[in-house]
Amino acid sequence: MSNIPENLKYTKTHEWIQVQDDYTGICGITDHAQEMLTDIVFVELPEVGIEVKAGEQVAVVESVKAVSDMYAPVSGRIVEVNKTLEDSPDLLNSDPYGKGWVFKIDIKNKHELDELMDAASYADHVASGD
Amino acid sequence: MTAQKTFLYDDHIKLGGKMVEFAGWELPVMYSSIIDEHMAVRQAAGLFDVSHMGEVVVKGRGARAALQKLIPSDMGRLEKGKSMYTCFLNEQGGIIDDLFMFMLSDNEYYLVVNADTTEKDVEWLTLNCRTNVSIQDVSAATAKIDLQGPQSYNILKKIIKDDRLEGLKRFHFFTGAYKGQPVLISQTGYTGEFGYELFCINNIASRLWNDLLEAGKEYGIKPVGLGARDTLRLEACYSLYGHELSDTITPIEGGIGFVVSAQSEYIAKDIVENQKTHGAGRQIICLEMLDKAIPRSEYRVLHKGEDIGYITSGGFSPLFKKGIAMALVKSGVVSVGDEVAIVIRDKTSPAKVVQRPFYKYAGKK
View (cartoon, rainbow over the protein chains, first blue to last red):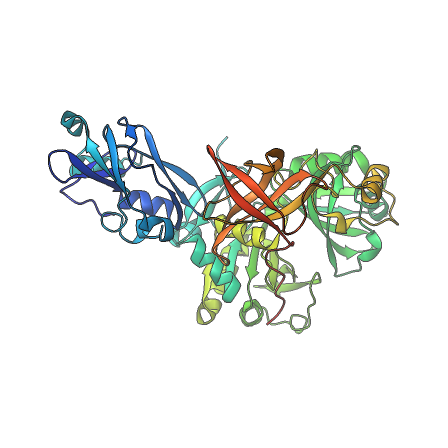
């Protein structure tokens, strides 16, 4: 069973967001996602400053075998990206909720957070095999 | 149609294999990590279930002559107990399939073909082998287990006690025994490492597989999935049907011109010989990425802004830790040392044309 921290919100497409204060969120991919991908060898980060909509593709994560899109959990402006991943994409495998964070976002509409899953619902989602 | 299961399916599940569908079969793409499995084969040993591959026995007084017509290679290179890599060509010189041909006797040949193309191959053989030849597709009854890597000999000799094993040369084989059943043991492979391909009947496959894993424990053997099989063959620049080779790609274009013999008489010889002398319109080149991007199949290749072709196989090389690729491009535009650009999503990444292969066959250590 993969690790699903209680304090995060989750998407069906296996991203997490941690709300730092009322308007900034830090985002990454879940432990389950990194387990499915295995051996992550490349991350294409979004440009700082761009505006994205919830569900829009923002980054690309590549494992040895496959190319996967990463989507924005909520709408907003990208304010920071984790440049360390360019040289150490394997941080997504070893520490997906910590050093493997992907970007920070200025949350445009707080109500969008209510649409996301909590840890228990995400655990059910993973167990259902989606 | 549901995917078929090999006789090692339960063993893959027990080993934690992540199963995927490939060529109509359920096979493990990896067990733990493609990179770890890849490196196990380069440094120690790896065990592969490739039972999905097709095996066809062609025999009879007319077998040799009939087969010679179908392949651009010289049947004279074969002798009893020896195999060779070759391909079937259509009338346009396109590759119907690439295959290994094992000579069992003057009148009997064992053909190892791709899973997806087995039916097409049997049809082609049937159409072209009319007199004094029998064609038997034995794929369904046959398991194929590959043992690859520098420790392969030390592992196999614990299981197969046979004097012929020690001196077995590359591209040679013999029929040994395991649990009283015949096993065709060939010193060949698809990884760039020293190793063996083992063919046996299904009902002993699981025991052979588990015995090899047990015997290989002290040498660091790992079961290896299709993911690492692909990265290993890519580093060694071995062609994959449907990628470097296809019905519309000739052996000269596809980078396997070395199988072509001027002495042989075969279907589409005029086209192939003409390309050999005057060059083909396209060629396979090898590329190494100059940034961290990963080249993948079908990405376009640009040279000074001009589209010159596409990547046939590409990926991350676990050994060299960078993106590598083979590409089918317009002939005569680029040579080793030149820089090209690979179109990846909406950007381009620089790559350098390098010498083939990326990884040279390592031989017995």
